[in-house]
Image (cartoon, rainbow, N blue to C red; front, side):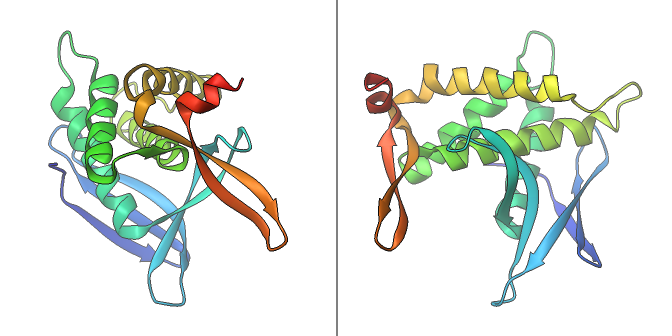
Length: 184
């Protein structure tokens, strides 16, 4: 899948991801990051977590986050135009590609994708003359629209993370979304 070129700069415990877009120029996103013992970096961002049903801090690998965000920006700009729903088109493309690659969509991957899409919308809005970042209401609406889209179009590939208590602590396991719905 195509994406834009990007650079990453560091200052203290913050990383600035600079995505070089055609329509919006250089778009900057700033993240706190952790240096891992193996030398890799993990970036912090706010992300809705389905298991606890609230927004919380998430971590993503540097390369994964940068590539996914540059891809989303590329798709946003390429799907924008008259009579196009760039948000749904971008979401469908990213999720379809993920399912082709991994054979399924896990709730944590879905929530990360939605968070990345929100980060991109806000960063690109800052480049617009009258652009404003999303309010909490706007973030909630984005979550609801994309969760509904997931159920409608990708429900057969969607899995939820559940936890069982063991003598060793909590053990995660996956439940298909369709099976989960049956047991409601």
